[in-house]
Image (cartoon, rainbow, N blue to C red; front, side, top):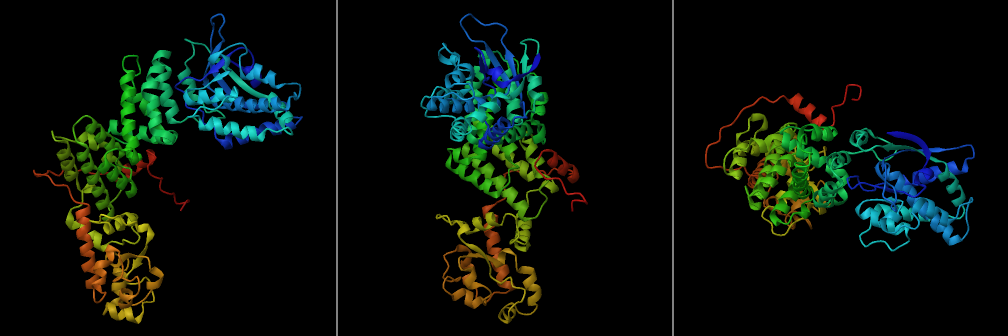
Length: 594
């Protein structure tokens, strides 16, 4: 390895081209990154006292030899973002000078093109000073060569070039060129067969975007393969996986790997330790030439399952798509590690897509019942981390049901008695799943979906602490205790578009006014409209009706054979610590923070 401080223009100059390996992340600098670099270059160009501006490092494999008539190639390990952005800025300056027909600070447009953008007298890819990967490559070549952009172009390359093209003007181009001439980097040249690029890559945290889990994992898998295998693995599996995630790849891939590795390990894996876990535990011994394709293929298949879990619109099965959308709207992603294995079981023919729908619906019922009963949530992640590994029996769906029913008291699936009791008694108005709850109750057995976001929540017995004489009479003896006990319970809550009109009116008035309970098309108001008086008996009667609906909407799974419940001790503090470590729970505040 050799490292030298060098001007960036000096690194670019000469007959050579830098190539970005296929396993590197795409070009990812955004407008804000470009704006900061542009302003910094302009500032240093205008400051006669500034002799240099350090941009960071560029790490590359320098070819020891090359065939006669070819251009020396340097494989970039780190520095793609800075090199690409500089090329875009130089191209914007080149175009302006070409339009003006005049040099600036002693350099002409053709000199910029010949010295820093292209390799003169070469054709095809060898004519380019910098070669990116996939869509980025074709777009950058079109920009540098002043050609029309490809139909499916790189958004980042296109938008950043448009930014520079707009910002570079006749008034600032001289200062910009002066600033670019002061740019310095540390050029680190690695020697093939001597230096370990992966170890160097892992330790990098330069002035560009910090390395993320996707970068590290992709490079670990592909960097050690011979070029032909790299290309095959990338084109066949890795690039389709990136394409499946779409724009969410950079943010969602780390979460996918956390949930995938959690599924494999059967216990929680920290989001902060995904790469190390992947490298040391899951992929250990599997990145050799014979095993690596199976590893990458497995990742690809599970990634396509994960995309459908997180983006249900990509799931072709109509009922499964709807079930996943409901699970997402419930707002809990703890089940993803297990659902990954369930999807894999479906792909293997162990359970049909219709069966998978039933699995998702059971999970929804389990989560909803536990939430309604106010049971602790800190056991859920570890429950689903090991769920798939604990299934027993030949019939997959039956095994899922039996396992849910066989979990001990701390992880129990609340039965109908417990669910009804807590459903009726709990504060539903301040319930975190309130919107999901009311939406499902309102749309119970409906063919025409009602968006409850178009309505507001109405307390039939008003919230006003200064209870009116009419309502005191309505509630009867002990009205104060009844108002406090039932105000926010499900029996006293409904939906309306006439909240302000109803206000604190007496019950009889709320029933008959325009848009009132009798006039309302809302299903939740039907049982309210038939009540002659609104008191404890009416509230509990309606609460039990809604509890009947809820028990039907979120049923307990049924199995033919008796299930043995397996009791276990749950260390809640350890569970909570594991959640914090996995990045799934914020740490509790200290006394000082409180």
